[in-house]
Image (cartoon, rainbow, N blue to C red; front, side, top):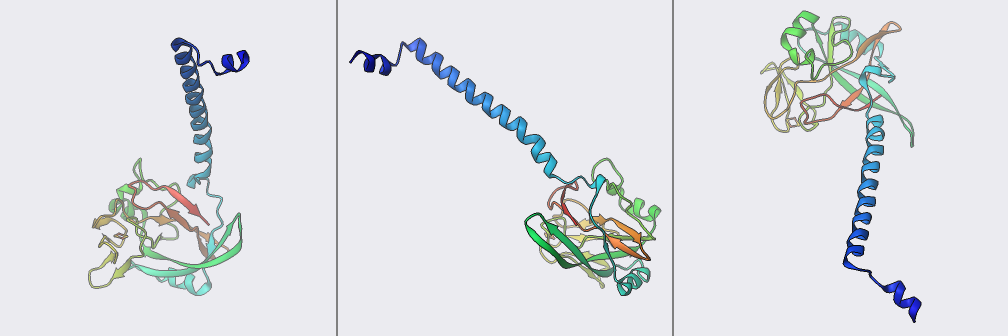
Length: 209
Ligand code: FES
């Protein structure tokens, strides 16, 4: 039938190549638009620490006393982090930080990485005379410990070592320890719990309380 023949006619080679070109052009344009729309969406999902709207978790009176008694030898401070996820009921999890008594001059001398263009933390790294470090190893996320005999933080997973002020001394970790925001609040101190991306030289926020 004439109609069916003309419908199935693939056309001349020139027509075919024009059609292929148009189809590819539409696909490429679709891809470009998709990427352009995805970039702002992805960036909007990454929390911005400089505008931290998180809820600092207060220390109990006992843990606040421990913080106040902390010395240049790191002290473990335990606290409860309230978490709320869009899909889950509000929950509470126990966390801890390593508190070290110090001042800005000492921290700046030991940790120039915290004050340079990259790795700079957009909140005070020393509050009330203390710095508190996240207990999560910046290599691949294990929990390190203070080794009293070595006077260093030592990670049991791949052997990264850090000074008491969090300077990276040995092992595969790409950066020093991450200080967390500490603030004075209602007669005690409160910590904002931030999880930074591991195995990156820069501090990239994954989540915060
Ligand atoms: S996770 Fe700590 S050294 Fe690898």
